[in-house]
Length: 131
Image (cartoon, rainbow, N blue to C red; front, side):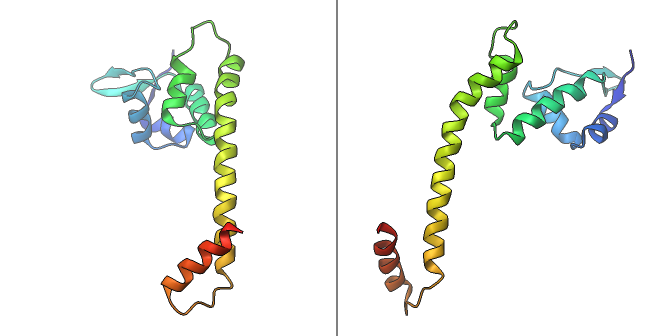
């Protein structure tokens, strides 16, 4: 079995060594073997880092990734894990999208602002944004 130092794994995974140490500390990655105080990993850690990257790109929090990896029975297939998380995450994302669209609309309304004071602007924008 071939072992790699943390720097080699970090380079291959395109993440900082500190990220790997953090993931190990919080249990997203299993503890590395050590030789002379140096962390040593097998290539399998790259697959785990790939899953974590995919989950982060999907917008999952660290807590949600913990759930994905650790809080299902061992025999639960990955598809069932993803489906369970997606069922709760998609409505959250829809709510965030709606909120962001409202923010964008409000900001767009300020582009034609001709108010003389911020107080006046705040009052007129609140009235206009409610319409």
